[in-house]
Amino acid sequence: MTTPPQPSREDPIRALLRASHHLPATGLGAVVTEHARRLGAREAVVYLADYAQHVLVPVPGEGVPGRQELTIDGSLAGRAFRRVDTVLSPAHDGPATLWVPLLDGAERVGVLELVLPGEVPPELDDEARTLASLVAELVVTRDAYSDFFARLRRRRTLSLAAEIQWDLLPPLTYASDRVVVTGALEPAYDIGGDTFDYAVNGSQVDLMVLDAVGHGLPAALLSTAAVGAYRHARRDGLDLPDVAAAIDAVVAGQFTGSQFATAAIARLDIDTGVLRWVNCGHPDPLLVRDGALVRPPACRPGRPLGLQATEPDLCQVQLRPGDRVLLHTDGVVEARSPEGEFFGEQRLADLVVRAELAGDPPPETMRRLMGSVMEHQAGQLQDDASIVMVEWRTGREEQLQP
Image (cartoon, rainbow, N blue to C red; front, top):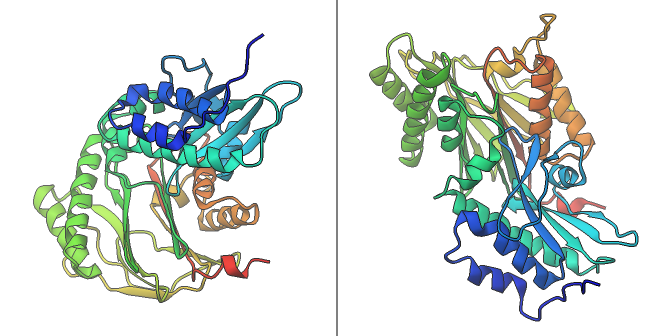
């Protein structure tokens, strides 16, 4: 008869932290399995979400139990990932399994599986979340200097353009008590000219959604230069029209006249809820307020980046607490079904509202929304599709909950 592992008196978080100082990415799975035993776990497996967020992929290692991929939409592990909460598969005359989301801030990295003997004590949930937080941080830091996790996460080969775009992106989700920013790209393995970027600095949130004309590597190179110019101008503290002018100069100076990009470049004041933006030949932002689609005040769009003759007009709207602003490329709303029906702005807004009513966290809303866009086109996008959703809060919402 096998004796269940006994929890160690040594703090498992400190022990794992000490063991991680010179830990290579390839050793993460084994070290997590070893140190999870200090919590009383019989087995522990780290799963990472693939690029398209369809499946959870187990991280192998010496001594790590063998596991299969798990679907995000059809498994208990997937439920923990979708709902960003622990999920318990209770013991029935056998081991129990606790699924814990791996979060880097608000960014969903994957899920940690803990197999435990018998019933799970209430205090273990908090300890498991703390362990999972450290594991997520280790995944992110090791991913910065290793290809191990990137190889695991891809279920098929990325195009060269997609490789460039994914490395260019900020974290897909940022959240605080005042603002939530979350984005998505499709097709995940073959994205070309679409991208987004953001930065949160004190009370200011800067955002850009960009669509470089064309497909493949030429579009990816243009969008890379545009994002670099955007970050340079943003970090120099330029106002939005001047940011657009700086990007325009780079695109016009480095690419031919047939190559350009459309973009929505925005700035949100977290303290006041004032959103300003410039529209460079791009779809207008959409505003979802109180379950309905609201169009911001009309504002004359400028010409695309690389083709501008004058600076674009500065647009502005006053947000209300709980408003969600959608910045998107035309590949989202102009996605066509096999019968020729557009996806459309109203369908986009309705999906956001339904996700909110269902209690989906913002990153899950984005995942499901992009899944709906792909499904609308029967899995075959005619154009890249990218979207960023920004939710403004006062910071007092949690205090008002009953």
